[in-house]
Amino acid sequence: MESITKNRQSLPALRAMISRAYGVSRVPTGDDWVTELSHGWFSVAYRIRLRDGAQVVLKIAPPAGVEVLTYERGAMATELAAIRLIREHTTVPVPDVHFADCSHELCDSDYFFMGFVDAPNFGMIKEQLSPAERDRYNEALGATTRELNSIKGPGFGPLAGPFVASWRVRFAAMVEDILRDGERRSVDLGWDYAEVRKVFTEHAPTLDEVTEPVFVEWDLWDNNAMISDGRIACVIDHERAFYGDPLIEAGFTAFEMPVFGSSTAFMRGYGRTELSPAERIRRRLYTMYLAVIMVVETRYRGHNDDEEYDFARARIDDLMALLGRTH
Image (cartoon, rainbow, N blue to C red; front, side, top):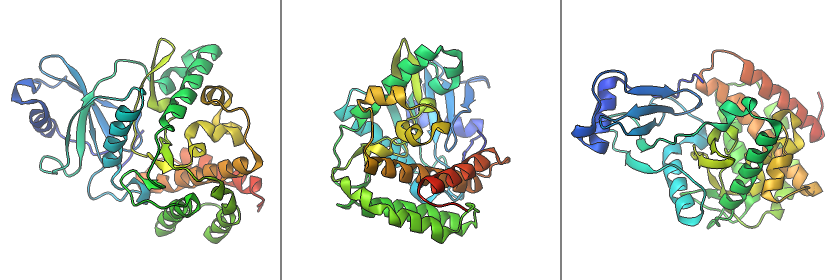
C-alpha cells in the first residue's frame, strides 16, 4: 500500500542504522540484501539480510514533516510498549525487538529492528486456504485476542497515559480527535460533522457499562497475523494498542457489518456467541469510529485512488442508518 507516511531511506542510511544496531561486522555489502515489505499502510518496513545471513526486519516511523492523525502520534513508542506488555503478561507470540533508536541522529524519526518471522501472512494467503482452514485461523485470532484482553490496565487511555476512569469520557475524546482531524483537512464524510457528533452523543450512555480497562490490540485482523500449521505464529503491528473496551477489537467488526466478513469463527475462539442490545449499540459506535478513520486517513496518507475512501464513505451511511439516521 502506497502512503506518504512511509519514511523510505537510502542504502547508505540503512547501512548506518544496521551498523548502530548490530555492529559494523554485520553490515551487508552489495545491493541485493534489502526488500521493502509492501503490505503495511503506515510505517515503512524492510526485510534485511545481514552479512552473516541472518534475516531481520527494520521498521521506521513516518517522516517528521508528515502530519499524521492525532491518535497516531507516538505510534512507534506505543508499539514497543505493547510488545513489552504482551511478552510480560501473555503467551501470544510477538516479534523479538533487537534494537530501537529514538535519537533521530541517523534518521528523522524513530526506528527499530526485530527478528524476521518466516511464516506466511494470513491476510495475504487466506484466499488460497480452504473455508475450514480460514475458520481455524480466525478462531485462533479470537482466542489470541481474548488472551491479549486479559492484560488489565491502570485506566482508560493510551498505554503511556494519561488515564481516565470513564470509558465514555475516553471514547468521546477519541471520536473528537478524529472528527477534528477530518475538519482540519475539510474531509467530506457524506454527513455534517455536527450530525455525526450528535449520533455518538445520543448513544454514549451504553459506554458506561464498560468499567474495567483492558489491553486492546484493536488492529488484530488477518493482515497482522503470521500463521503456521494451524496456529498463529506471530502477531505484528501493535502501534494502535490502548486500554479500553475489548468489544472494540477488530474481530468483532463483522458482527454488525457483514461487509467486513464473518465474525462467527472469531467469536467462537473468543468465547462469545451473542451480544446484548447495549453491546450491539457499542459495537456500531466502534465501527462508525473505524469508518470515519478510514475516510479521514485517506487524505492524510495521500492515496492516489478513491477505493478505500468510497468503501468507508458507504459504511458511514450504513452505520448512520443502523444508529437511526438516514439522508
